[in-house]
Every structure is written in structure tokens, then in C-alpha cells.
Image (cartoon, rainbow over all chains, first blue to last red; front, side, top):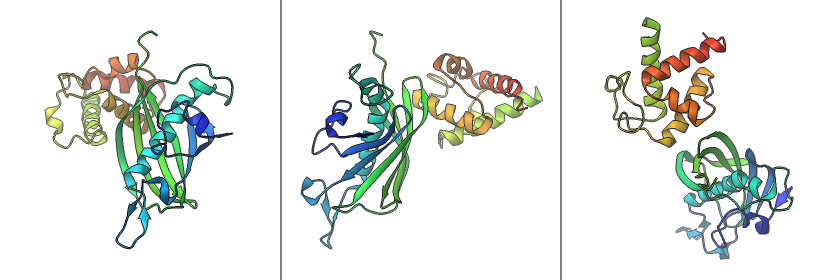
Length: 156
Length: 92
């Protein structure tokens, strides 16, 4: 199952140019998923190095992992655990509250296709902790841990 | 009692290392001090990290906030909880 931007924007509030994933694949809602993104030079997000190369600011790799994780965490309430069924509920609103143990191995250049592999490590109370990696051509280029708070609906 | 004191000592180290409390020494954490709020001052994100660390170190699961509230009341309460769970799962 592949979820495209028309599905993703029903779950998370991000919109172009700040919607950083083109698709989410291999989704098990509440467990894991893989965000996919290919950004071209015209998207306005790249920084130009002295060499003339365009690189994606590294913080945006973490943001893209977070967008993928938010879709995996909240998509089940929208599409159903099994996938693309009729929407069953509006998505919960989540907040990224901690980013930790982040490492970067190399930059992302315009035209690279990046896969963001996220997996839920723990759910406790209102908090969800994910591990995430970013990969280009099957090689890990960044990793980190992301914690979200999803406050429960006070109406129950 | 000696076993409990040893476990409390282990848990102090676990808490300080897993939560990266670089400005806290083990001696500053009293066995009956509350871990959250006015005691050690931990918050809900620390609780999540502690749940993960306890699972990794001892293989014990804190399934929800109600159990967490009891287990995280103090270091002494946490030691009792860990000892009880290890005994129940044959880990001791």
C-alpha cells in the first residue's frame, strides 16, 4: 500500500513546500512505515554550498522523519488499521516534544531520493517514541529518536 | 534489605544515565523522594524514557500510567516494583 500526498494531508497538517514526503509505503499504522521523498532544486528548501552544490539542511531530515512518524502514528484513526478504508475519524493532533540521539553521516543533494524508515519504539500515556533512519540508495545517512505528545481528547 | 539497597543503588545509576541527569549525583536522590514533580523533578517524557530503560535493563514492562504512577512514586517504590516483577517473571 502506498499513500500519496492526498492521503498524507488528511492526517498531518503540513503543506507544500513544507510537506517533505511524497509518499508513505510499507505502513503498519501504529508500528512502522517508510516515507519517501525526492526534492528537486526548485523546491526552495536547499542551501547552496560554496562549491555550488545544493544541500538539504540537516534539520529537515529530522522534520521529514517526524512527518513520516506522525502519519504512521495517527493514520490508523483516519484510514483504519487495515489501510485505505473510508475515513473513520479526524486525526489526533500531535506535537513533536523531543528529538534525541541524532547523528548525520552525509548530506542530501537535490535530486536524491530519501527513504525515512520509522518504527514506534514505545507508547506510554500520551507519549509515542519512534526511532527513525534516513537512507539514500540503501545507505543510512542519518538517524534519531523522536518523541511525540498526542494529548487525549478531553471530550473522551 | 541489603538486596533492596543494592537495587536502589542500581536504579539511581539507571535513572541518572538513561535520563542524562548530568548535574545529579546518586547521593542526591533519597529513597523516599518523589521522582516526579517537586522531588527529582522528572516529567512525562522522562517517564517514557524510564519505561524504556527499565524494559531494556530488567525486561519488565510498565504497561500504562496507572502502574507507572505506583512504580514511579519514589525510588523505594520503584525498587519494590522491580523486585516484585523480577520475581514474578523468574528473573531473580
